[in-house]
Length: 226
Ligand code: SAH
Image (cartoon, rainbow, N blue to C red; front, side, top):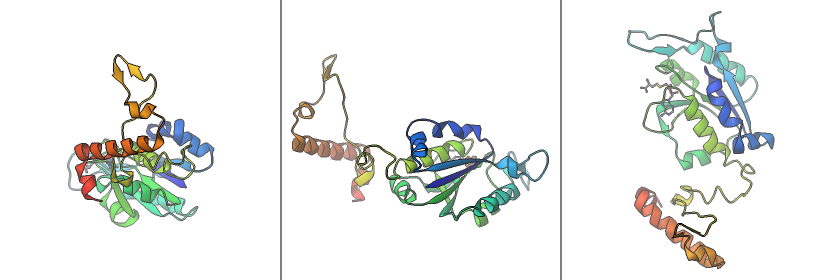
């Protein structure tokens, strides 16, 4: 999988990809992430990428031309499955959306800033819009990092224990059951004895029960989806 992230603030998005699972995914050659500075496609020597909003009003708007030039350049190198604009009013990011995107080969994530991008970018240049929740961030970078993380960890081979992504919350419409590690007793707070029993079938049964119980109390809507 290859992901290109277009941003006017590259530094904001570098660190999530330079550590831990996302770094290992790249080192293993399973994923390549390329962060592109939109200012290098600017149309003037001041490297501007934004301008005042037609009709007035507070806040700058990201211009279409640098974005179009950048996308045209990227498209000479690969064919993209989706060009995604990170947007608060886009399709909500959920586990099924992450699952679907993890099957794609080449993606572009476009990060907005200020008031967002010129509407014509949304109408003509992107294929899809994704939101990480119903709240407004100051830029698309953190949203793009969240989306990329959710997707990359699902690419086969990225997680060392292949089954572990499958037992995460929201897969199978269930929340993950509680997990514990040593010590078995701390300040009188004991780990459920079934987990120490060594009886694998009983452990699995307990985990399933807890997952259902937790889903009923925390995300009952998931159960009505099944
Ligand atoms: N004026 C816009 C918000 C712009 S916020 C509005 O009211 O809808 C600036 C940029 O941050 C956006 O262009 C988008 O790329 C990003 N952004 C903000 N919140 C986001 C969210 N919840 N999900 C994804 N991207 C978001």
